[in-house]
Length: 317
Image (cartoon, rainbow, N blue to C red; front, side, top):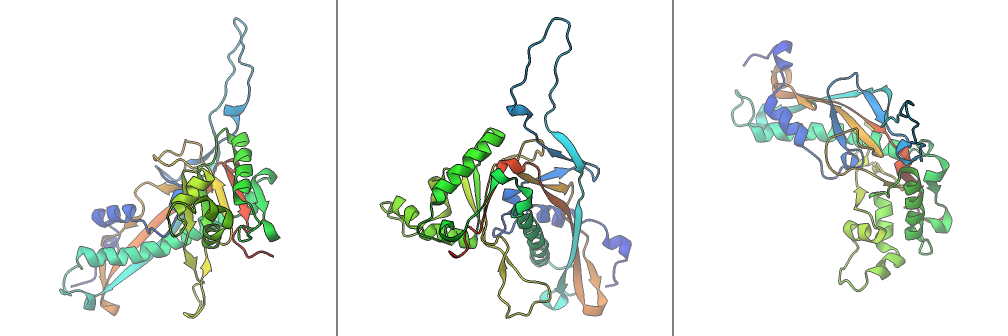
C-alpha cells in the first residue's frame, strides 16, 4: 500500500479523536485538581476571581443616583496554550493483515501509549504549578519542619488542615473540598498514630483515601502516584515522584465544564483536542503511524482557594 501524502495524513480521525478525548490514565490526578474546560479559540482570556462577592458594599442609593456596579471575575492575560505532539507506531508484524489499517484495539493501544506520555508531561507541569510556593501568599502556605512533618508521630495533621481551612474560608467564603497528597504524604497519614486511633474500631485493615477524606472533613483525597524520569535517564535509574512530599488543600468544582465558576485552578483545553490524525503507512519501518496532538495549559485561577503544605511527607529532620 502506498504511503499517504502529508495532506491526507493530516485529516483528523473522528472515531479515534473521540476516544482520545475520553481517555484518562487513572494514575494521573491533574485533571481532578485542575478540571479540564474547553475553550472555543486561542484568543480567550484567563478568567480569574477577586473577592467582590465577600466585600460588604455600600449598596444604598439615593433617588436619581447611579447604581453601583460590581464585576464577577475579571479577564487576565490571554490564554497561552502549549501544544504537545507525539506519534504512536504499530509495526505491521503486530497485525494479522499487513496490507490494511490495524484494528481498533491496536490503534487504541498505540494512542494510549502516546496519551500517557503526553499526559505525564501535563501531570508534571500541573504539579509544579500547585507545588510552587511563590504562587501562594504567606497565609496560604506552611513549610513543615522537623517534628511538624506528617511523617512524625508527634505531628498533628488534623490541626494543620483545620488552620488551613479557616484561612481558605476567610479568603473565598467557603471551605476547601480537596486534599491532594504525594505518595509519601499518603503513606505517612495511613500510618499516623492519631489517624489509626480514630479508625481502630472500624475493622478495616488499612486506612484508605476515603477514610482520610472523612477524617479531614473534605469531599475527596487525591493521591498523586505518578513518577517521572528524564528522557535520557538509564533504565536502572529510580524514578522521582511527580507530586513530591507536598500536600495541597484546595477548593475545586467537582462537576461541569465551565471556567466561569471560581476554582483553585483549571486546565484550558482547545475545543476538538486531543486530535488523532488519520493513520498513515510509513514504508521505511513498515509501520502504521498515529499522529496525536494536544493543545492545553493549566492555570491557577484562584490561589486564595488553596493552601500548600511543603514537605508534609518528608522524613522528620
